[in-house]
Image (cartoon, rainbow, N blue to C red):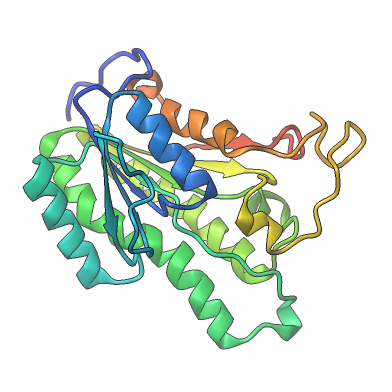
Length: 250
C-alpha cells in the first residue's frame, strides 16, 4: 500500500490532465480551470476544431469516448506526448428527457454508451497506469438527477448517472491501496446548452427550486472538480459532491 500524502494546495503544477467532453459548457471551463492551476491539459471532444487556440498548456484531440479502440489510441498518444496521466476528468455526456413509456431502445443505448461507457472506457485504460505510478485522481461528472430521480431529464439519463455514481465508488475502493482516487460531482441545473436543450428555463429567483436563487454556472462546477483533482482533496475518495445551490440537501 502506498503512503497517502497530507492534503495541500489546489495546484496542479507539473501534472498532466485528460478532460473528456472538454469542448462543452462545463467541460471547457474545467479545461481552463485545470490549466490555470498549472496542469498540462489534454482536452478531448468530437469536434475537429481546436477550441483553445493560443493556450500553450492545452492540447486538443478529437476523441469518441464510446470507442475502446479510440481510447487505446488516445492514451498511447498522451503517454507518447507527455509521459503520463495524473488526472482524469470525465465530462463527456448526453441527455434526453423522453418519458419511460415513450423511450426507445436506440435512445437508451445512446445515453448509456456516452454517459456510462464514456466513463468506463477511459477509466479502465488509464487506471492501470495510475496504479503502476502510485498516484492518480479520477473525477466523473454525475448529476443531481441521480439523487432525486431527475430534474428535466428522462429515465435513461437518470439511470446512467446513477450508474456513474456507483462505478466511482467501486473504482475508489480498488484504487485506494494504490494511491488512485476516484470521486464524482453531482451538479444541479447549470446554464449550459445541454440544460437548455431539455427545459424551458425561467428567470432564477430566491423562490424558485434553487434556494440560493440562481442556476449554476460552469465555473461553479469547475472549481469543485479542481479541488477533487488536486492535492487539496488527498483524504477524500469514493464520494459524490453535490453542487446544486441547495436544491438537493443530503
